[in-house]
Image 1 (cartoon, helix red, strand yellow):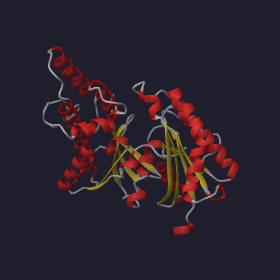
Image 2: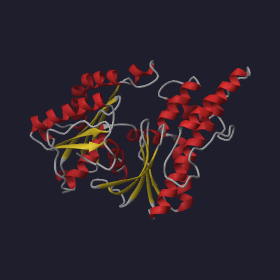
Image 3: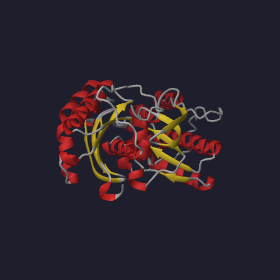
Length: 345
């Protein structure tokens, strides 16, 4: 099928603090609506699961209706429903999965429970077209830092490496707190770093030369905290911009180095970066620089498609429909620890 003949898929994302609803037709994005509860979590310095779950309950119906309105569609136009079944916060996932089941059953259309991480890979197709097969994917967010070999996003995803402690986005949030910057930390560190030097402080690079494709950011986070504490104890001011830039440089140096190592080891010439941290300007710039030098083609979705959204879920659901994948049953669970190798349930 092509064009208007392709099925229209409604995607629902509630893995963390954002209620995302997207609608796609094939690789064409028709609507992408998000209701965020970030402000409700900011005063706690992090996401509170119960607060997130209640926010999803309140936002679900109006967000779905808003997406339909933006797309100029009615419920009767929907051909399939896709939903994030995991990984994520258990209570938050339950809200989205329950809603998706209700919509699918009420509309009499197939339901597809999908993997949140695989959806971050699939969303790039809405901007840059079909994914190369195979591709290497670097997924970096508040909860995940993973390197994947993706022969076919609808059928097979292979884990090559992941974080052994803090995820990259989690480290950004914790360092931002140390520097007195607001939550979520990623955008504020990115902004502060633009006025600082990435070589001002020689922060450590975890697992830089260990031969694996795994990541570690806990030691870096601790090193920043200790450096700031020592400076403060000595009665000296903390150069926030330089610390932010040096920390950020340490993170993106490791991420891009290992991503290019993965490409070289597996003979893959296409690298995709996704997840919330993929919106970081320095990561995008350094990745492009190193990919150009290595002869690797880089694909990074626009920042709005990097953070959690319903469009990515709809995009993966559309791929599953096109691949003839079996629909999920109405008994699918919300699995907070769903492994990346399980593309859909």
